[in-house]
Length: 395
Ligand code: DOR
Ligand code: ZN
Ligand code: ZN
Image (cartoon, rainbow, N blue to C red; front, side, top):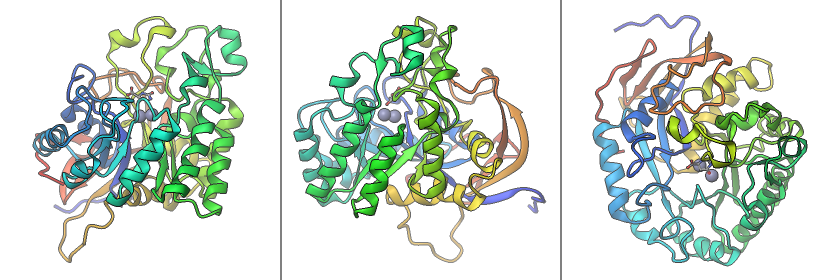
């Protein structure tokens, strides 16, 4: 088939190394089939899912289940981050060696964070020989406690429990110091504050093996978006920060400090978010809006060019989880995303392929959208339409 792609931009397949697919155990929010369909709609050929499922992905059996399921019903490739402890926030380390042997690409306690420095040190020391990156959620429980929104004028005005920036920054600094001590590479997940970003900037200059990610929602939205309507879709962990932090993150994306953009796609059912702000679970979906948000917020205003977008959403994420080492041979089939840079579209609650619609972007108009996605040379998105059913096979 010959396609006329005049006016389109063809890039190597986009990769999101931070998503929550909810399978096994919370399939009412999302499952591997629906989550990967949302990924493909968003232009992604590869995602890396987090282990805070039920049961937790903290052993080879659960890991195998997720990988096999993804091979059967996944619309795109699914890589898996194993939990570094048994159960979420568990005191015992998981068998990371066995999970590495079964294809885990990273280890993390995302959704909770490793609270204790001694525990994190053991995680890093134990994991280092397996050569897998540790992804850290960076949340100090003592400071965050029952925090609901960023500590500042918004938390005061709305009377919501405050979540200080230091509750994140302390862990960023801790993890970088422990990385230096143990030799294990550390990846800071969903960085949200100006000071945390500065710490990473300095760490990199000092040769620390640190990488970091930011989300489109922390780049595009700030705590001031939360008002007296108490939109629970804007309740995320870590919280939307102040305007100064948001601008600092954009600066970090522009100057190269930020390695990659991830969605932290966190689906929750309508009935779970349809409650008081304090009772709602944290998280918003992001796979289908990420590209449009990044193009609108960063490319359109000229903050970054397309080459940097490809670095942030395809090249660096592959390197961080080590899926860039696959040997390419002549004739090997490509992973490609075709982007319409001029597509202007409005986000609506009923327009998602995800099972959930808890997006903070509903009602916003975005520019830029994936029209076609090829995984291993096969069209999984064709002129904006999902082609399914799928079977990607093991990756
Ligand atoms: O907002 C969030 N939701 N942040 C996390 O770290 C976890 C995630 C989830 O699993 O819902
Ligand atoms: Zn997290
Ligand atoms: Zn997460």
